[in-house]
Length: 257
Ligand code: PGA
Image 1: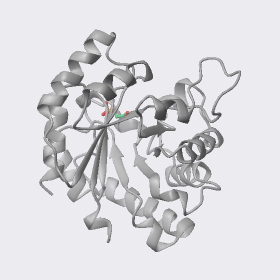
Image 2: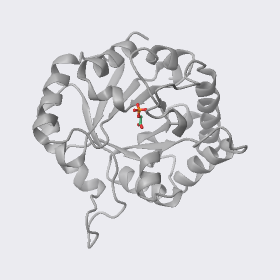
Image 3: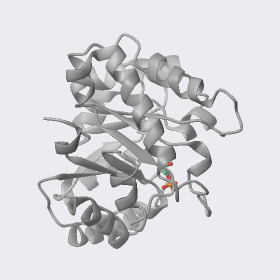
Image 4: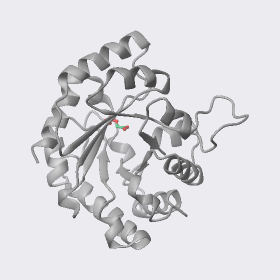
């Protein structure tokens, strides 16, 4: 077992789309007919929580997930959704610490750590998102290091089996001109750096099994390069995941490897 034999994870992040449940059901129907099943690829669709039950019921060819959870299971926490609730509604995955949550909900590394812990305790796969805002920052490497180390602080090697890390440089998200996607070396460098951090924290045997994904303007056109030259074990897809055929094509690209 090694990095090369790992399954590829293709995770859709629908963000705050679509506007209605009727549209969501249509998207799910289209996705269900566009997706092919592959042994070496795990497609996951992270929908707005309100659409989760319907999605789980109608989508057979992909796993389902949420885009956030709160770290407490239940209680007087208005508006929050716990990991257990998400699981009981059909989620197997939870995206945690996405840069948009960090920006619009003031999420800190300490908060992401509590969420990771709670997601793993509930038996969900926890998808920790990390990534620098800009490369102009002299210490962008240190910024990502802190996000990984603080986000995983106190998470045991035993629990790390359901951990996925996504490197999502903020500058590359939903970018019309992802200036550095043409050079997958930047992705590779960072995935190697993150893998080294994981080796320090969990040891080689555990660390090589933790999938490291890339996110930021992924399409069916750059998936192959990212998975080969970029050295990642999958991709997290925002905008391109909103079109069933395009998302299915990304899954097909990953299956070719
Ligand atoms: P994008 O979003 O594919 O639209 O860049 C990715 C993400 O933010 O998860």
